Image (cartoon, helix red, strand yellow):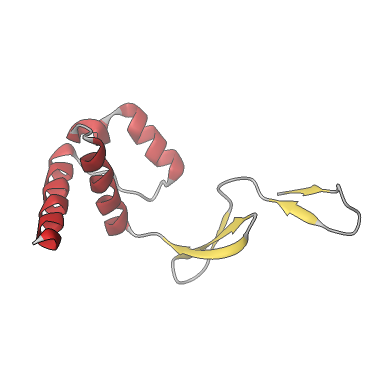
Length: 104
């Protein structure tokens, strides 16, 4: 956190990206230029979102095991448990099955 003193009448706090404060309910308070917002991490939602990304962009299932992907995910959210390509394949099939059910 650092102070930007461009205007003497307005105190502007700029927060470096990734700043968060955990509370007791496993929620995190995200601090951004728009203010403080509550965010709750969900492993299941994150897996579903990853499957969605792989399906719509036609990425290979083993992208989840690439060194670059692992490093990126770990830096972004260390709590995220990366799944193997077999689990990724199953999650993608489940995602497509859910989409088909919605269309019928």
